[in-house]
Amino acid sequence: QEIIGCAAIDHITKNTIGTINDVWQLPANDVWGIMTPDNKEILLPVIDSTVIAVYREKKYIEILNKRKILWPFHKKQMV
Image (cartoon, rainbow, N blue to C red; front, side):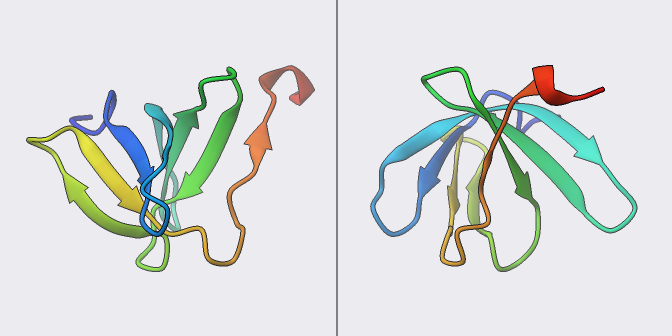
């Protein structure tokens, strides 16, 4: 849970994508929920090809979105 509150930074552009606000522990891999500045949640699978580095003390992570796997998720759409 130390990861909640960390900024998510794009590894290539160095732009801030959002802030980690949720952690889902799933059988295959964890998923981090990233809240964007415009209040959309992006779901990030925690796998080697997406998470480049975690800097817990500096409170940010670097992620790679090379395959465009990040997508906005609207909780209202869940049934």
